[in-house]
View 1 (spheres, rainbow, N blue to C red):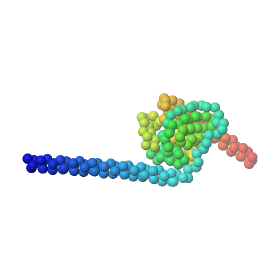
View 2: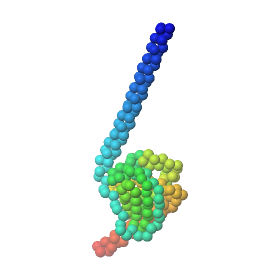
View 3: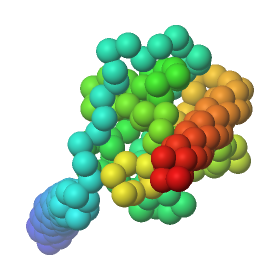
View 4: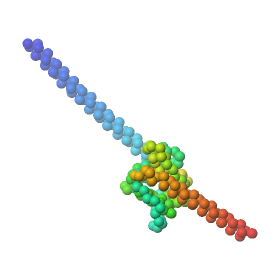
Length: 206
């Protein structure tokens, strides 16, 4: 009987020891996982800062004029980021362009006003608009084909793609048409103005 009790006591002690060891192992895994997550976060943050440093030559973003003119179109949705034009993974983070946010877009004769609650607003003058199109993604965000409104614009000496998603996706095609019409009209006006200037210069020379 004494032997039986002793055996039971030994088994109970071993079970308790195993439980303690198991909990210690679990705690070690949790601590290791937390440290790994912290490391990944730190690396991402440092990468973000490094990318921002590389893009430090990007000029300050334009602000909307006090009198932009009558509203052509308005849109509520989300801003999904900006990249170098044609390179949907080359994210631009300078001046807050890398921060995703809600967005209110307003298109006027003066250009495109981008208002972002909780993030930096910016304005794209009509002379800097290059094109608009529907695409499936930008800056690592992928939607269905044609689910995102991409606006290409020039800032400094850099072409930028900025991605927006309307709360009502069906209206995005109208935005593409309106912006491209504005770009075409502005390009024609600029060409005509240049031709008139050249003609005046040549006439004066004669």
